[in-house]
Image 1 (cartoon, one colour):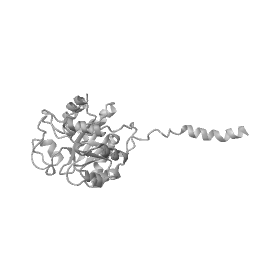
Image 2: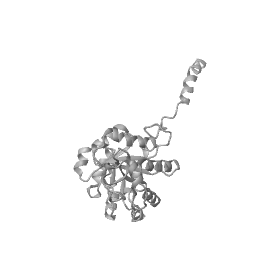
Image 3: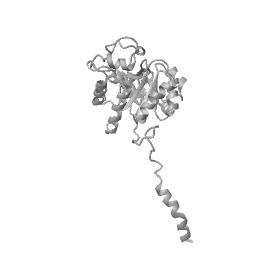
Image 4: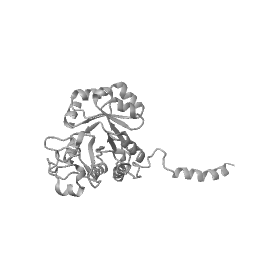
Length: 276
């Protein structure tokens, strides 16, 4: 009888041994790459890349500087050009931070590349693809950082959101990236297109938090609105809570006391020094 049982069990055991361990992740991204899963870390997030007097906001030079200073994440802004291409820029107009003028929607990306420079480093306005390639190379080299990409401007259609999501997927950065917006409807599109990608709703009042619970993956909130009770309640719902644009030591102390998941600050050097 034991010999018969052994003959019956041998094929089953062989099949089980050939299967992958159930705990091993199949993919790091919705796109199915073989890269290892990495957790998003927004504990020290450089707002607009952490500009300085000599390094302009949302520039590759500022991004590199902030990472050297100890940022775990880069927060930056994504806008659409007149031909629906994607560039890294905060304002709807070009005049404050570049050598050109007028609304971004009046320019094609090719025109921007040929005629416009950012004011500090006199370099072209970064394409989103350039930033993603930089983040991918750092991750592949064992020095990953997280990305918070704010979708700026008028309401983004599903097609336009899909373009951003697909670029992040193609770069293998889903597990390192969150998309942020002032509009919950935009983030709902993000969640439908890529449930594994992070998303953050930017709020200035608590009413917006109450109205959107369960619809988004987290909140970017001013320190003055946060209490320990509010943060605990959001954490119980699985939400990531970040302190938005925290510039002062008082704000940093508040965010540490209430248990926020991270700080979004324009001054990474000062914040790191305060942390010790």
